[in-house]
Image (cartoon, rainbow, N blue to C red):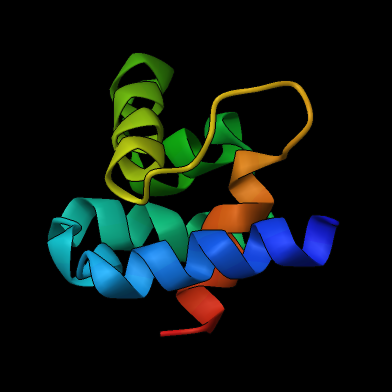
Length: 85
């Protein structure tokens, strides 16, 4: 069941241009998410406030059409979309 869900997310990301629609900053943050960094660690690495990083992460989730529910980990789904590009 999870595999079908992940496949659907990746398929939708491809169909909508997914990662191509991310800004350079969003791509940079997604790369850091893929390295396993938390929002706090990302803010420290990029010398930004946490309040600057959080909306970027949210924007990535929206642009990749990742579901906002308690049954999925959007950070993992975003990284899977990145790896599948």
